[in-house]
Length: 271
Ligand code: SF4
Image 1 (cartoon, rainbow, N blue to C red):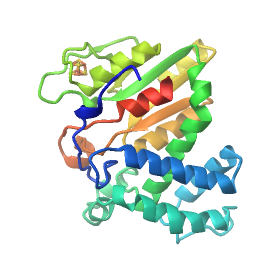
Image 2: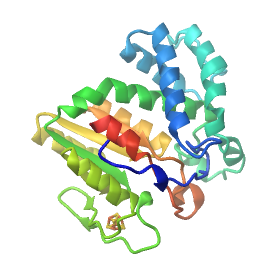
Image 3: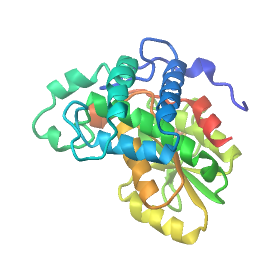
Image 4: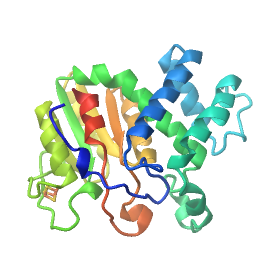
């Protein structure tokens, strides 16, 4: 590994989830999700078919309110209920109180309404999409990364400036997570941008038209990452992604709070 970041992570609680669970590291989360996907793939050797099934199930808010006429395999649903959900509950302890207190007006926000079952399915989905797209992404001739503005250094004023398609980190603070990721991504010829504006689909469409093999790496909270990965997949763009360690931005918490993501997992994905 080219980077050493082990001591920089402070366990953080999110509004609904934290990949630290009950530990001081996110390693256990990544190991658990990987093992769960391995177990799912014992039922579905075809990872694309498994992905389709997981996406179908996750359209429902609850695993128990399912799934007649949807073509979803019942043994998969049982596995999700009996094995996947109990294994991932430790990471999503905030979902129930969050949903209980969600105001009527905020219930219109699809992301804020994500249920605990859906979080667990998105966790599997992100891992599975990474496995499916990792090699295709790596061989793309033009790769970009979209980094979330909420993990910038909060104690200082950010000096990022608008670049050709989005904002670019100017590296003003060594300890800033965006700066750390930017340095790492550049080592792997991936262009890092800080995602601040809306309407990224049109930009992706343009880049796809301009570059024969174009790939995207996303970093975001779990529901937004799963959604972004689906958008790219529909556009036939190889996509990989890393979830934020917790959801702590203003949309969830009313203000921005310190956050992180795993630089080690990021490097594993792109190396
Ligand atoms: S290092 Fe980059 S992202 Fe972080 S505060 Fe400075 S310009 Fe902004």
